[in-house]
Length: 71
Image (cartoon, rainbow, N blue to C red; front, side, top):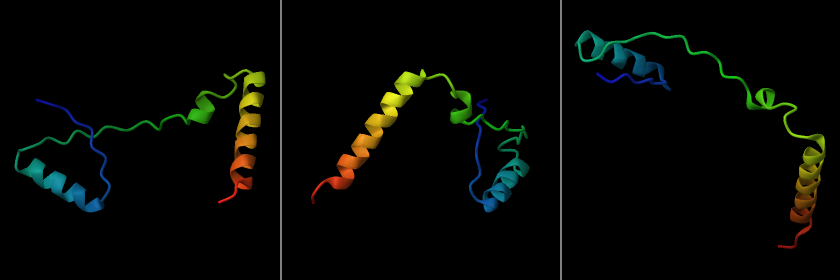
């Protein structure tokens, strides 16, 4: 047996899943999916301030160069 985690993107798919279960082709195991922690919260404060400032300056310069380029 193989266990798969499936995310339904359409409510009609749930009906099909339960029909497959009724045919004894699959077994539905309901599990509660834990909400994932946002990456911004997970990594907040892990980058040294000096490095973060350099990155922000580089991004700002890059944006300015991009916006001021001629087409």
